[in-house]
Amino acid sequence: MLRKLRLRPDANDHVLAFRLHQLRERNHLTPTDYVKMRSLELRIPSKVMLGTSQRRSITTHRHRIMWELRVQRLMSLHAIARVFSRDHTTVAYALNKIEMENAQ
Image (cartoon, rainbow, N blue to C red; front, side, top):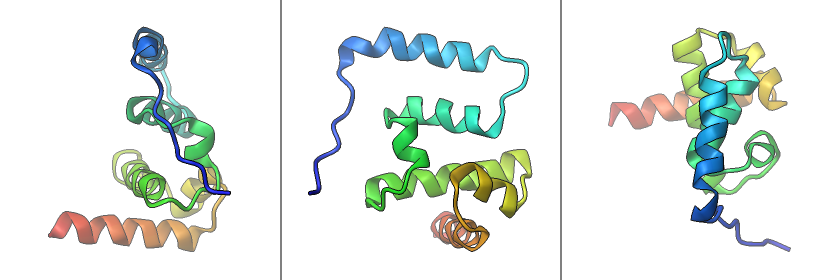
């Protein structure tokens, strides 16, 4: 049932670069747009990033983006939880995990 997550082929780099450019040129990025932008940079589909995948390769990046939203945009735990369709305690766990990694 588990299938391997494939990276997008390099032939689409110009398309990804254009999408990133479009997102960066907006005057105001919503939190969802920020997640989409970071997903494009990481070459992970935004549906997977916002989805329920529990793969370590995905959750590590998801936790990092949650931390970025908290630190850079000063969003509340509940607001971040709404973006990712998670409980606020899940966001708190992710933030603590990233803080511990940064401390090492």
